[in-house]
Image 1 (cartoon, rainbow, N blue to C red):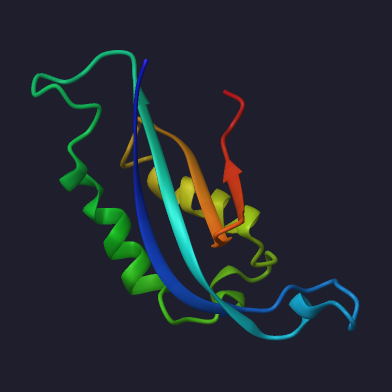
Image 2 (image 1 turned 120 degrees about the vertical axis):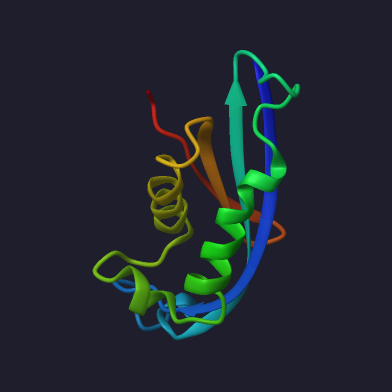
Length: 120
């Protein structure tokens, strides 16, 4: 199995709903997110790639045009804008275009990340 990954970044605000008033994430705040897309293939293409990294430009364009410097609550409603839900949303957006995609990882800070990887 061959695996590749590529990171993208964006800044955005959000507010997590359903938390107590004393929880800091219940207030509007922001993160410098890092998104990592993970692709895999049993065999390489004729060039020797899982997928050409240039073909991942669609991810950058989507992040820049849809998520960067936005309030994620406006984009993701009615879902809570947790890192877990962001990862799943991005997986669902890109899986049709990138059949080798098997996981999306979203990090809100250098010490935390959430990964969405379907079972099948």
